[in-house]
Amino acid sequence: MTAQATKPITADKLFDMGSSARIELIQGEIVSISPTGFEHGRITAKLARLIGAFVEERKLGIVVAAETGFLIRRNPDSVLAPDVAFVQASRYMPTQRFFEGAPDLAIEVMSPSDTWSEVSAKVEMWLEAGCRSCWVVDPKSKTTTIFHGGDDVHRARSGQKIQDDLVLQGIAIEVDSIFAV
Image (cartoon, rainbow, N blue to C red):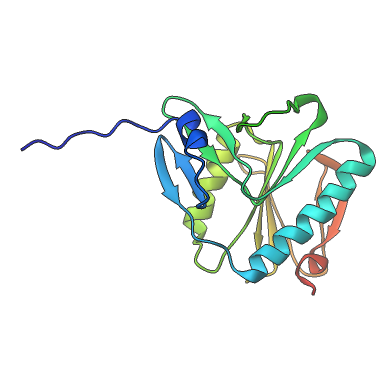
């Protein structure tokens, strides 16, 4: 008996499936993501509000929350859904389907079950797809690490501000404010 190869799923097929489960598509393979915990959701919502207000006030583009799919690779397809994302106004194209390409900023909030190797792999996927900046927010260490590719990495800790002039010039978010109740 021979093993039968499965055909990779495309982004279009994934979208048409209309799944209510939390999933992403990595090189044509569906990857299940468990639901997040309450603190993860609270921190994600706070970041979306803070960044959304900054972006909206300056008319810089669009901020979207978790579950928004970005088609970052074709053949085989990969669709990722960051916890928060920003797309600059000049790149925004309304669509009912997945956004074609990477956001300018992708934010991943670590869950207790996430490992740094898993998160680092996702950061690499974002950056390779053209994302200009990727933030990793770690509630456990109360830090935010900003990746711009290569050795351009900045970590903001308690008492410091998150600044990312590459993507959101002038933004300054107090690290402590992200985790405060």
